[in-house]
Length: 62
Image 1: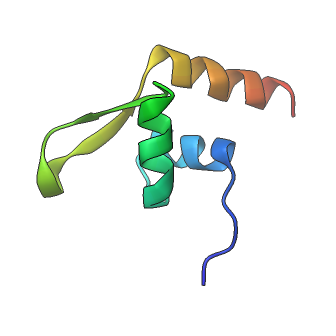
Image 2: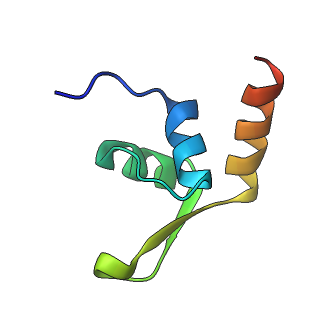
């Protein structure tokens, strides 16, 4: 079983083109942190400006 993956780790994974846990995608879309472009297996999540700002803010506070 996969351990807990936090929000910033998932956002970073999406920004780098890697996959994140499925439960995070829906939450990120509701929060307007990502948009999903395409349909089905060819869909690709893309960070919105809000998502990039949240990721940059988290990186700056490290």
